[in-house]
Length: 271
Image 1 (cartoon, rainbow, N blue to C red):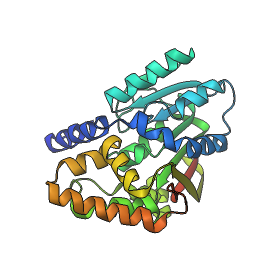
Image 2 (image 1 turned 135 degrees about the vertical axis):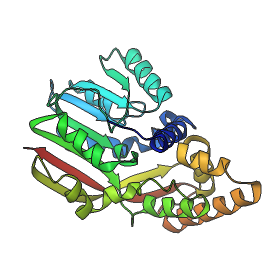
Image 3 (image 1 turned 180 degrees about the vertical axis):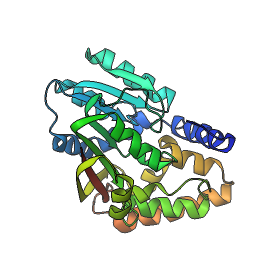
Image 4 (image 1 turned 120 degrees about the horizontal axis):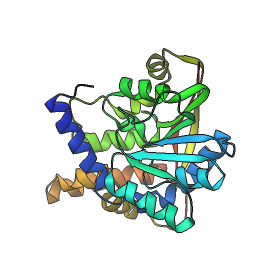
């Protein structure tokens, strides 16, 4: 696969973004939604599972606990190391690899289930991602993704952030992975069945919206880097806009924050 210098620069930038903050710590408040997503996967003991853009193992760890033979892969070196450390502590045999969702280092038809929860959607060349997810999945196996939608809460958050810090021009919007027509087009070959379902993901924090924004700023790579690129005045404006969004959609009381974020569940059965 030929990678242009411009694409190599973009990939280096994206890797730095995801290695900033601490996604392993950030993801602790995403566990409830991740476990609901995992239950819907219906993974059987002995299934060969590939977790693409695995982070620190939010899907990989519980899937291995359930008896699956799990491989996790992520572009961020520090998150792969966190995943390995978690697996060692629990005595789980998981293979965590550092690598690119656009060029998976695995053979054709290797896995029964290929999964990516809010992960592979951020790779810059989605057509390559779709082709790779399908390539490594065995015939009759499943490719399952969870992708934020453009008109859901996280899509709105990304839109606000993009007004303050424009995204890379070479990269299509990640939330296009939440558009049913676009997903059908991306999985237009080698797929026997495609199920697309919009669902809600709970984002719940035991502190108020202003602290949620600060939490994202500290631990979530894209928000961390966005704030770091701005001067103090612009940082205050971005914080204010994001706090307004969280406050507008907050369903909690008593100083907590709870938001329902729409995502598209993609289940593609390999032909």
